[in-house]
Amino acid sequence: MKSEKNIRIALLGFGPVNRSFAEILADKGEGLYQRYGVRLMVTAAVDSTGGALDVEGLDPGRLVKAKGFGSVAGYPGKGQTGLQGLDALARSEADIVLEATTVSMQDGEPGMSHVRTALSLGKHVVLANKGPLVRAYQALQSLAQDHQVSIKFSATLGGSLPTYNIGVRDLAGCTIERVDAILNGTSHYILSSMNTGVTYEEALVEAQRLEIAERDPTLDVEGWDAANKLVILANSILNVPATLDDIERIGITHLKPSDLPLTMLGTAIRNDDGGYSLAVRPERLPEDHPLAALPPLSMGIVFHTDLVGPLAMTVNERGPKPTAAAMLRDVLEIAVGSRR
Ligand code: HSE
Image 1 (cartoon, protein in one colour):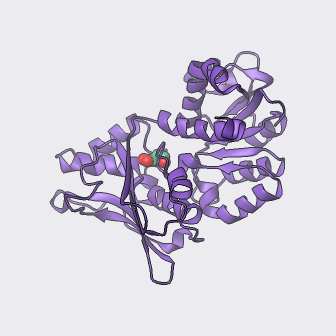
Image 2 (cartoon, protein in one colour):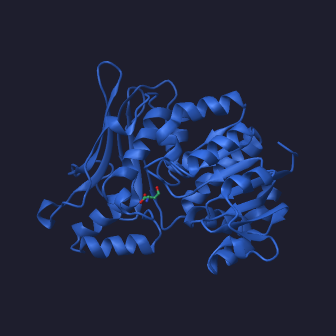
């Protein structure tokens, strides 16, 4: 870290999640400083058309305002149309890079290059973007280790649900026999709405209005987003080097009202050999299942273990701010560690 008190942050991507992160800093930055003794300074912010850069710190409220007019490149005096993530990253003097660009299922870009470059430059990385982790979880962990920096991604496992911390820290010593998870808010919202008679199309439009759907909602409704999360969960919590090819995936677009009620569920079931069978598909949950009555804008997970459980967690999320809060907890863990 550059200094004990100032933590410089680069925001790569300024969609709903990093924009919400900036809103949180605008609202609570001073309070966080009082509470944790670290000043979280945004020194770069980049969206798809440009960026803003100032190693002395940008005003997060002004970034949000500039974005409201189209792009952070409109930031007064410090904005640059055409500024790219890698360039901003190199010039930002950032200690921590927050990667929240759009998920790419093709090549993981631009997130992959952002993450690799940041780690190689000795910067910590906090991800909301699942793409790079899904494509190269093990390689990115090795790169982080080689450069003695952290790569954190608790926001990729169901918004603000503390899936990672519970799975890795609090279930230490347990064998996880089975995981049931509703980790894609959009498909859960759509199916919950359809279960009450709303049409698929109406529910999808509302999920988009609430900014929980991906820019390309196919990722949500065809199960890719849930499958991505399951890959990251498998690698990080179950300790199996799973890829998307290991996941049975069925989306929700083919469903008819007569098929309902159904829930879009991700499951990991431990096999006798210690491996896991992984699936994402619409399922009918028994009435007494801990996730059976999960409200429409919620996500949830149940860990079944040998020593503890079933341990169930749910969260009711409206919009992207809770995911930004998950990035904040990762940032604070890096910046403050156990002093929290
Ligand atoms: N589109 C995702 C969801 C949010 O609906 O849960 C980001 O993971």
